[in-house]
Length: 111
Image 1 (cartoon, rainbow, N blue to C red):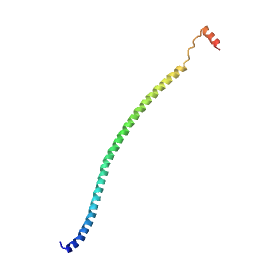
Image 2 (image 1 turned 120 degrees about the horizontal axis):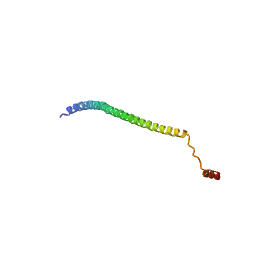
Image 3 (image 1 turned 90 degrees about the vertical axis):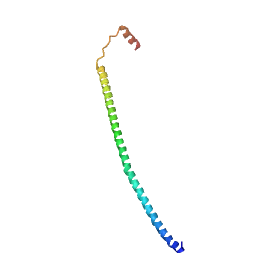
Image 4 (image 1 turned 180 degrees about the vertical axis):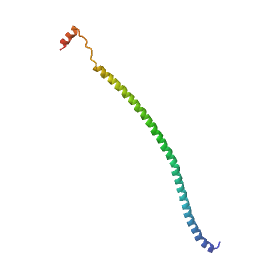
């Protein structure tokens, strides 16, 4: 190739490479941006699934807490019935036993 042709081609190739590299850079940035958008949208489905799973877990926890509440209520009612029964028994007069004279003597001696 003649030197004149090489002298003309070098600036043209440099311009093409400079412009081409900028175009390639922009294309790659655009592709990366598109992938990020796709991931956010796809991640939205995963996020929705996570939220739905949390809702189910909260519902199970509510059910469990309701069952514990009912169980505790039953225990409290049973304890209340027992306390009422004991209080009723304590309010009833205690039958006094007649003490034998021997027991009375022992009581006087112990004083």
